[in-house]
Image (cartoon, rainbow over all chains, first blue to last red; front, side):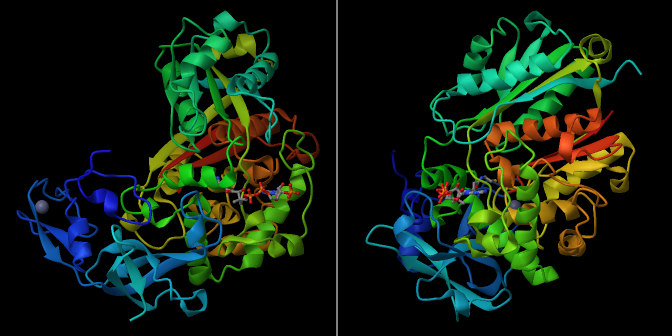
Length: 140
Length: 386
Ligand SMILES: CC(C)(COP(=O)(O)OP(=O)(O)OC[C@H]1O[C@@H](n2cnc3c(N)ncnc32)[C@H](O)[C@@H]1OP(=O)(O)O)[C@@H](O)C(=O)NCCC(=O)NCCS
Ligand SMILES: [Zn+2]
């Protein structure tokens, strides 16, 4: 795999090369960045390298506000190969106040009892280990 | 009406752990049963074969070639159709188009999956990649986890309970006792289902279908060939196929239905000129208990919010308003991904021919099959008529 940065994203990554490869560099610097179409100004998070709205192929990086609310979630006890050491972990879908939906895990210190659909959540960049980065939901 | 397309033969292997069977052995078993099910159809009467399977479970690449070779279907056309768990009914729809266009007269649809030589964890890793590998799989997704998120949304929106979910499992396992090809052929009590270990909350082990090895085969023909090669042709009356975004994040709330299924249902009902109330018997894609409740709503069997009431009131049991999955469903038959849709259609063909034995729905004339790929990325709806 010839890397272009994206292989650093998430707990296990399956993609190494992407137009938005720099995304992981921003996460490393604790910045949650999306892309904005230079032509029609539509904002994407997670980032897209091209705009499907106006078919523009030039985008720029913009900071994203991680505040939002929880749409749905599950606590995983039976994990796929590669994730077994992480169980249990809570997978969640959140809706950011800025309108984008995001799929991520809850921070390890959040327990299932604390989680309820509709509650306020905050998406924040996080460092998994020296090399790997991601974002996760926290309770603000 | 010479343009009608019929199913003239159906077959399936036993589903389950089949340690002595390769994909060749499994597909042979299903093909053999389907050929025997026709009236003297010869190998050379088959003009084309469509092989259906989801990639990544066995090592054979481009499997249509090896299956066609093993079943001696060369040099007629053959190729692979892939739509995750909906592969075999997407192939059925393709076969229908081939016949309808006049390109071919008789087409075989052969679906299979060989899974149980992998661990359940490894299988879930493969399945997790039938989600968005850029922004979702890296968090450790699995099919039970995705469906669990729909179950949570359903519970929050409509007051659906874990007991309602368990009731689907109890119903389908009950009917499995009468299906000699099912992986599990025994009853479970509600208490037992509720006490099994949590896989992805709120889904427990018996809310999930099991991975299995198996194959199915459907043989389709145009009207004149159907009359020649079948005692009782079963006519394809309506077909629908819809799609939904792969990533959950790109879908619209509420997370209590699949846009693909709603679209497929709309197409199929329109093509067949019927309404949900006209359905006598249905097979829906119950890969998880929640998936069956979602299907009731998507197919218009009831209002979305009434789906838990439908199972509580036993409206989908034998004798109820629309009997659903009275062959045991995926929950008890096992779910060899690429073979499942064909197995559902086989069950419906038996029902319409009056050959369903102890689970026969009296006087069934119109049947509906609903087959979902992955977490609703693809859904087919097939309406059959005797
Ligand atoms: C739920 C799941 C994780 C359990 O896997 P597992 O822990 O390896 O389970 P096993 O196969 O070892 O089964 C454990 C026991 O439960 C039984 N069992 C499992 N599933 C069952 C079912 N659906 N019905 C009845 N019994 C079942 C097994 O026979 C076994 O019994 P035993 O201990 O007496 O032999 C696995 O079946 C799974 O991933 N299912 C979902 C498959 C899927 O996602 N398909 C795609 C859908 S879109
Ligand atoms: Zn644009």
